[in-house]
Image (cartoon, rainbow, N blue to C red; front, side, top):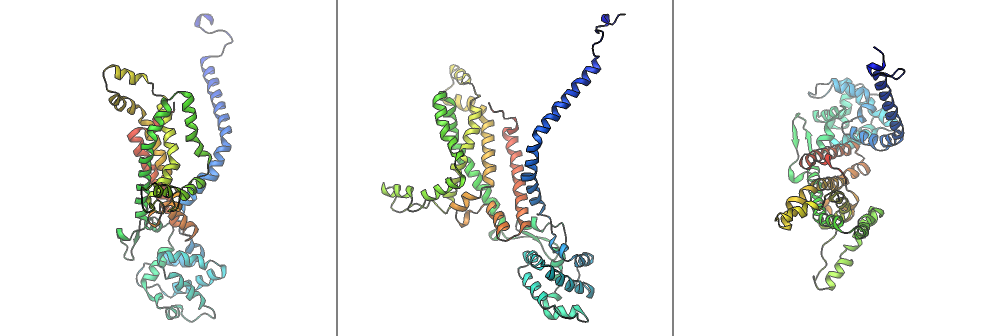
Length: 417
């Protein structure tokens, strides 16, 4: 049978050849897209993802003692933790302290051990200063004579735990817990906890700000979506303009406005609404006002983008069938805007979780959020391990809240219209 009779034109590519050519063209297009996006991927990896991963890795790293005293670390790893170690371990401790002092690493080791026990720094520094001179016949009685704490099993168990890497100590400390010398897990009492209360306070403030933004932002988004285009565009400028202003400038403006002698209190007392200035700053009220003002545009834009895609035909159809306007709005219009509400709530909530400047300037002693504690550990305490642990929990909380929001309102199905 001729080739033309079988449906194949002489000289034309076969079906297999056409499929291979199509796959080759797709691979070439994908490669071109990857090359175009490669600079952005490298930039994000080097300036965003890698620093975050390094900080999170600090939450389980424990390299101060192993790097400065490797021989002592190996001896402590082989020690069973009963009583006090033998003479050889005491000799390795003395040698390690001398080497760390000569290399300038003793301060780093002392600071790490001081996290486990506050007086450990003074113990190491005092011992290292008195180790000058010839080696004694036996190090164990010499060190015990220098400080009786070297004869305590608890001291050596803390040193053994500080020499282990990776360690769960930072992750436990970030929730006010620790492993006792007996090997059991113990939590600090609720009224004495610092970080658990900070996490609860952070979630509470973030949830309150999200609710305030939703209550204030939903009517504004509805107004922008239903006004004529000319009026809507003019009002939209009022929503977008805050993005052009520095966060620090906006927060500082509220700092001035909310002062006892500021504009708001002067207006309130001048109108006779209050006889004394209202407490609007250095408390939870100031934090909520400042954070709501900063995050409100995110909520408005997220909801507005969905409302623009909702056709007014549905509302008119419901009312033509006898539904009251309020009933039609609640049962017909609101459900169609839930993806935007979910996206806005999630965006505002996540941004509020990591806020630092606004609570620091407008809040009081009882309004510290977890981001402030992370900054304190990195800048003041130099405890990068605890800062990494707090950051790790913050990332975990964000992921949990994302899955909860997504399961409730389906954020990943949101399409901006």
